[in-house]
Amino acid sequence: MNTSVTIIIRRPLEDVFRYYLDPANRPRWSDHVLSSSWVNDKPVGVGAIFQITLRQWGRVLCTEREITEYEANKKMCYELNMNVMRVHSCQTFEARPEGTKFTIQAEMQPKGWLRLIFPLIARGQAKHLQEEAANLKAALEAIEP
View 1 (cartoon, helix red, strand yellow):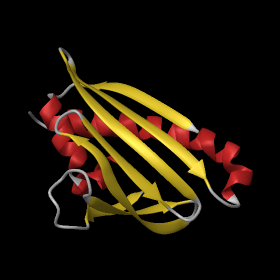
View 2 (view 1 turned 60 degrees about the vertical axis):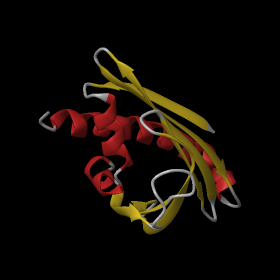
View 3 (view 1 turned 120 degrees about the vertical axis):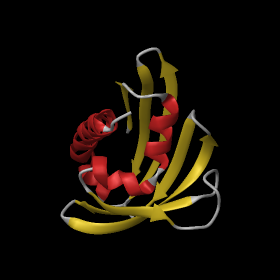
View 4 (view 1 turned 45 degrees about the horizontal axis):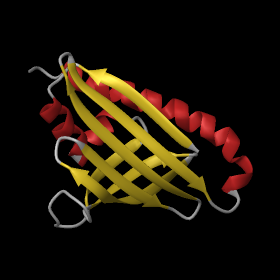
């Protein structure tokens, strides 16, 4: 399943990129994230890994996401490979006169038993991405310039 969400955030591109890339900010705008941090000492870029502890599907999960593509102030993609699902997600950032165009694209590939119920989950995941994008926008626009 592929999902894409685009919004305009009324903040400068560099602010949006920096805020999004800081794992410590993720619990502020992602309602299911309990904590998030960098795992390795690599500089932010390809090969860097961040860990997210989240509550999803009634359970607390600890996941690691590895950055697979990175262009400062433009793009960041990561891979998440769990027992039940593989996710490839890309976030792009474009300067606009009114702020920053933020797009998140996610490709989800269920594994094992999850394939049986994935059509039901896929609709919820698409809605979830829209909510998270709206939450990110609200969090960033609430910050004093």
